Image 1 (cartoon, rainbow, N blue to C red):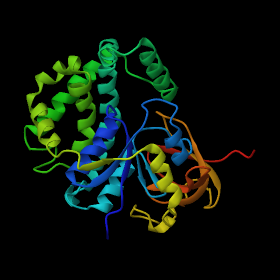
Image 2 (image 1 turned 45 degrees about the horizontal axis):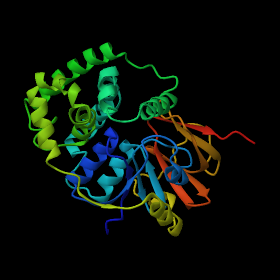
Image 3 (image 1 turned 180 degrees about the horizontal axis):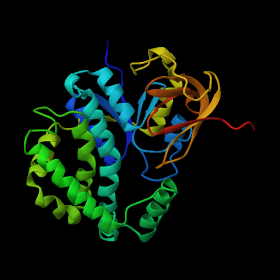
Image 4 (image 1 turned 30 degrees about the vertical axis):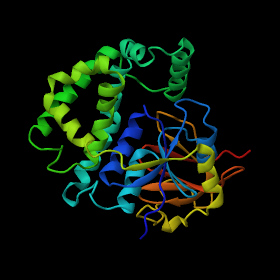
Length: 319
């Protein structure tokens, strides 16, 4: 199978984007880099996704893959080696990665973006930039329970000690080679270390974690080439999406847990952070993912893919 052209929509300071950039590096993949705004509006992104606005997303022609958990599955299919999910670690690595992408991430970011961290992040920027970012993230986290900075710091310190115990025993979290658990654990710590370095002394108490981070970072980011958002939308418009049973995800059997048949008009939205919904025709609902077909005036017909875990499927409201 020839390697498809991978287009990553991301921005430099995005922790979850760093997770994907490192996975691309570990697999030494070529990819096209589309820099997107950190806050709304995101016209090129939403032309492709129809509502989903979290970063990053991965585009392959007219197929758009949302959420880094699903993007990791695509990269594993495109380039199986080195494996993100080694056979003897398939279950534990996924479970650990889900913990890292949620519990660890929110503790780390509650610490990173405490008033002192936020002031460092926006040092030198006009006051309206910090206000706009805060309002944007407030809208994305409406209804979420968030840790206060002191509680986040306490949890983060404990989690760092637990991670240290693991990497004191191995080069990486579960052995001699990195897996999905390493990439999911790394990115919120990377934000602490590189994006708010005034907050980074919290890492000094766990030197084994810093050494593990250095080992993981040596894999680099693969081979990126710049692409504009306008050109990425044009790529989608010029392509046909892959058939629902032949996309870059490994399962295709229909799994009906909602009583919603294929062909229905539906919405898919994240359970918590970034609740903006994407509406379209449900053309796949498998064990691992949903796929919606939608049409946009600029992007044409696209298929937008979401993982099942962490996302809510509903019938679209009748106009």
